[in-house]
Length: 437
Image (tube, rainbow, N blue to C red):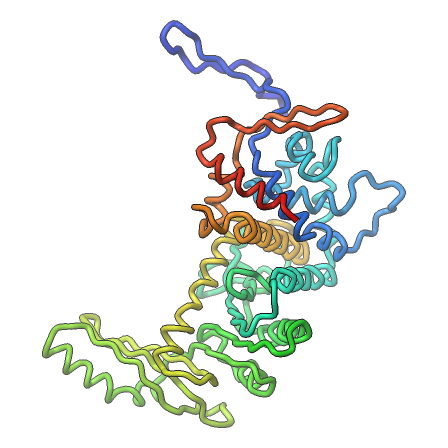
């Protein structure tokens, strides 16, 4: 590739002065927030845990770049917005990236990172999912009384000749269909799947593994599984009932359910016609589909307005009023969808351009791990700041993308951040918080 950045750039005049620029500033970085990521990583031990989980067939006597350094380099780059491996051709010489990773010489270029992805095995991706769970357990200061596990699926569009590439009619594209499990804002699982399958496939097995590990850590914790109607499957529901796990799961509408609620709908229609005010009811009734072994509790949310009736149904084995179960518990399921968007859009969790399926799974997991790093930065360092509820993209733009000069000698590394950065007080507070043990 020709060197297109060696010349002088002109930006006109300011009064009598010519405005000129070049790329000869020296040891400067555009990612001053890298040191915050380094501190969070040191608190969590995340990059080391990932490196320990991945198999490394290289001759250890001849390697130049340690596995932990490659992992940290890739995770930090994703957090700072560098989604392509080609970006590391320049980032490997970024003095601040080197300092954050813990080296003073060139980091890994795109070829060793590419080889890292391409040699991924199923054992690797299983082990990295285990890292996500262990990070969540370690993040809890005390044993929780109750945990709600949100299970959901999304799509990753494909535009090449990837392994297991299939067309999905709902998304109207060739794609993968990853399965995610969250607990609050923490991701516990990211399972890449082919798309021509039942959206709930593997959900029961994944939930079983997670529940088993959480109960090993906290034997008395109360667990609840929450999902939309795509996960209303007898295998998952019966397993929850056998294992004393609560569930609140959406139930797809059908003719039998509509007959159950038609009396309430007629009442709401009458009231709407009389007053012109949109009507809303939450009720419950026992229901058993033909494939069910027994009736179960179904809660329905009914609305009637200008658009007519709009019923919703959930099935649950939990106690509580219908309103509490629907509005206070089930409707909070939408938060998991926001976290999926954050992982896929802000941290490039849809970059599945590798030929091999397992390599793409590893890529998606790296985005999930980068999400974990950003989420823990929010919790550990930004809890009492204006970025406490900010998305990963907002944190990146407002806190991580800071101009910085790096001065290194044999005794000290000095990082000179931009003097007029608008959030310098937030950065200072975050750095001091992370510096404390």
